[in-house]
Length: 100
Image (cartoon, rainbow, N blue to C red; front, side, top):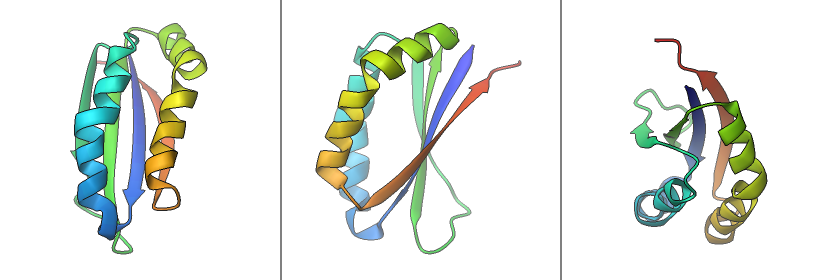
């Protein structure tokens, strides 16, 4: 199983709006693509530089599903996120293999 992790640092002024968008729009749209079997949203507790940091995590069966998602669906979903919050957040993505 593969864990696709998107860590985002959010400007405090838009944190509530961003969180609402993630819960009500972005994460449901990612799950509706059918490439993932589970998702969760976590907040980092040891934040630095007065930012608010979240990790959105999505689980899929294998790398092929993730690669298909990144090719077919991710560009439009990222563009929509950028349309709403341009310049007010920074994200980085990691791909992990679930061992146990």
